[in-house]
Length: 264
Image: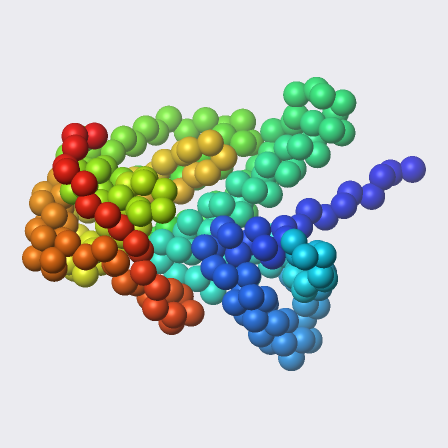
């Protein structure tokens, strides 16, 4: 008798974390998606399934089990780099879960490679999102290469970031911006400053990076941006709070402190 395979799902709290979104806002969105699917007479349970969890106080709270189809549905609602990042994260997460199941089912033996059909489907989903985010054809190929490696197929392509391009952590260190709470480089605050600078496309590039289980497109900047960020911070009076707007429209602040510039 064949053992029925259990469909893998993600807790909506984990999905919200991947999206860098408040869980209650994602719950609200999923309820809206479910209503849309029901109106179209499409089985919403194929995408989202109502569930609950107990919070730190022991109280029961609502959540959803989100299937792979549900993650694909959510990804199609996102645009730009956010959609690309979420897609890369959930694709990696489901692959990780499948790898664990294979290892358990094989009694610790080497897991089988991912099927070519499933990898082709993942590439089909990811490629248009990378295009929307403005990633070059080379970056799209590199992302596909990472996925095809799971099927045991090697694509001979290597792309390294230009040495003249730096990330926001590097910029934060050189400018001397750090978070008040953790003392770490204020990379997201730098992102907000850069957003206000409205840089031309010639001053940044997209690269593909892998860090642990995470893989995705990363924007890096011309070294000249370091001076531009430092100038903005000086001309605006070395603010301790860098205001930004969340996806839900709420105004928040990155609380930063300034230190003497250091070489990374």
